[in-house]
Amino acid sequence: MILAALTLTAIGASDLVRRFVLHRGVRIVLLSLLVVAVIGLGACSAALVPAIIACVLSGLWLWTVPLDATGRASFWPAAVLAGVVFVTTVLMPVREAPGLIGEVWSVRSPAGDLGFDVAVLALGVVLFATESANLVVRAVLDREGTWRPADLGGALRGGRLRQPQPPATGFQGGRLIGPLERILVLALTLVSAYPLLAAMLAAKGIVRFPEISKDGETGARAEYFLVGSLVSWVTALAGALLVWWGARS
Image (tube, rainbow, N blue to C red):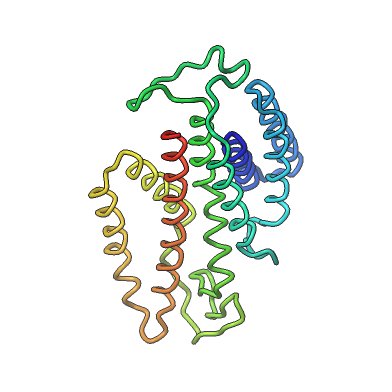
């Protein structure tokens, strides 16, 4: 499980650095410090080898998943990462005394003592739910050729074409709305607040309905909204399942 936790933490933090640190030199320094931090965390928690593997997987992610989500690998890195994370979470149980950190680690939660591995896993899931999940959503939209509101001519990325679309003024806050929405889905799912979760998801559709209803015959906005939202929700629910599984292990 610690491998999945460190991998998600490394990837999530790396993507945040890539997105918000514009200066190339500073970005390289911060990414290097992140590698040192992950390896140090692994060394102090008796998980040096998983930490090194996590750094390698994070490097492969940065190489295959560009910020514009138009790489040749498409969404396949995300699919491979999901497989690795779920397999390692299931096959690698939670450790009771993770090295030096285990000697001082003592965190209580409403469900009882919170293990170190589970805490790192939860941190990794939250970090991944921010910018990394945005990249996954954009990669899927790009792979499926879904029209983007920023496209002025209606051309789709997957080789298909629709009728020309006017410049869109809506759906411009997805980069911020998406992470907030996923974190809310994570939190509401983990506390079993399913009525609130259903109400929030329904409210999003109601708010977007006026813009979606302007599609006319193309259905481009509805397709964009449905594909993006479903991929985002599935990513958040998968993260909640990971944390739930770790807490119950």
